[in-house]
Length: 443
Image 1 (tube, rainbow, N blue to C red):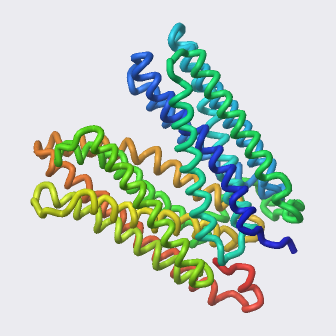
Image 2 (cartoon, rainbow, N blue to C red):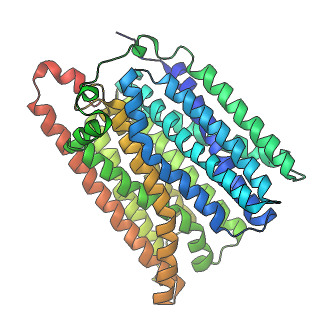
Image 3 (tube, rainbow, N blue to C red):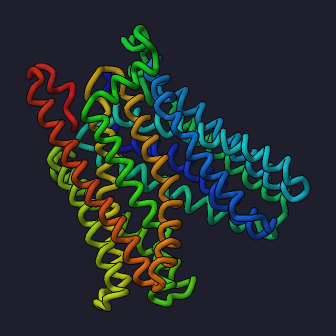
């Protein structure tokens, strides 16, 4: 039996996530700004391209199933990173081409963003599956936090360095900087995963491959109450989270009259709270000897309920004048967001092996697709709802309070769904023979 990987191995795999984040931030953030500001194009163009890359991540279950068939995750990680790197380069090239040939540039960008979406889906799904199979159950919450922190670090470092190298701006410089960043991220990923699978790379026989293929496997997993409920939980919770993020700054500006610089600092404070909440859950899980089912239930449900309470307090502080401190409130909201987010990732890793054997990649793909669709829909839903509420209510404070109220309801619904997931786990575990309990332990 292959030994679990240690802390160094977790950090190595975290480097893949850091590289993934570094390419994604250039395509979804930097190129977005270039199209809107430097090229004076409608914001709809980059918005549609980013949404397109999210939509293509519905392929995650199929990509995860492919990695299940061969029993190896490394080819899917590196293949995904290669597609992502090529997509990042192509997106930069398409953006540069838009300056002189708009239609051709958009065409190139569409192909490039398709590669980005497929690359993120393949590499991200296979990476989390590899972590789920190789990380000791007592370290899964900490591993989830480390991987998330390294992704954020990759985003921050790339954005800072690329921002300096892009001045003075030119389309040629944009292509060069993006291409170098993508190439470096790919090389780092190759070095990071080299030799990490060990004996776990041996192919396995999948019953689904003999009885209907991918669609049959997906139908069987969807028929599993725990997998289905967890997918719905991921979608609802991440929909609330992503919608909340995009309207936090406009809310602060419209209701509290914060300047752009002050509202940006507020977003930074929220992210600091997210990291703090993640770190707290990770440390507590290690000190408690592992991220077991009871701990997952408490931190996941508690994080969702805390997020609902936090966002309601912020919303009520405007129209009701409760005097709730904005900065402290945002920090606490971020902490609750971080607690449920890292718990959700830890739960993915712990629950991926539950149910039919050798389907970890397909399950992880299903949950990853739910998350991607939620993030794609969250921004559109949050901003559209805020515009509609302002039209209906007139007062910005009342409008944002109404939208935040709907998001709080989503967080509470997510908490209820999470309780159902773990109740299902308890029931199914009790029904299994004792000899198989070690194979289905959620960790």
